[in-house]
Image (cartoon, rainbow, N blue to C red):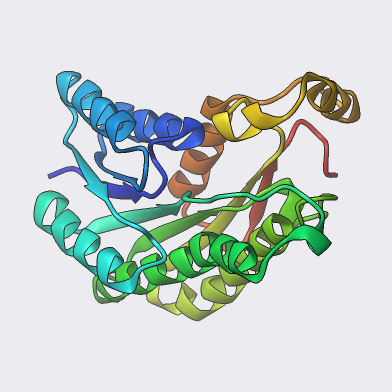
Length: 242
């Protein structure tokens, strides 16, 4: 049986590119979604038509019971989950002074608590097997905060700290934990930006363009495939953060 990966937030732009990239390499793929179930199921069927072992799971990653049920079903379908990609994430744009506590808490519940719950589910079997890899999808705004995205920036910075801590904690068990910090990527999440904002971000990017979800997926695969990289944050940002 081929190795298996579980990708959270796989119904969106980067998540779909990740699922396709792993499937093309022969991996069994667990495709998680929350609200984008229709897109996730369509992607699952697409990959199956191409001969991949692909399964779809719907869950709110901030809910402990739902994460536990998802992993139990994924193990039944795919066996040992050698790789976990924590890609599920949400954003909130606006002034911090206009943000409610519930909005702040929801961003952290999905972006940080969701990653914690998924890591906690994935790690025990990885530890028993003495192998495994976790890749957390952060953001360049987790490396240098973005105006009007305080909660998003803080949550993505937390993922970088979680990555570094887990890399030290789990390294003796043969488990690697890395992070990818995308820049401005052509995804539905960034579709909410105005053309003026996108143009300004392009001008600030040395390569003078936005990135593609496929370029992020390539970076994740490179971290999964290199056995001597752990605890690192790889920027895929066209030089925006150097």
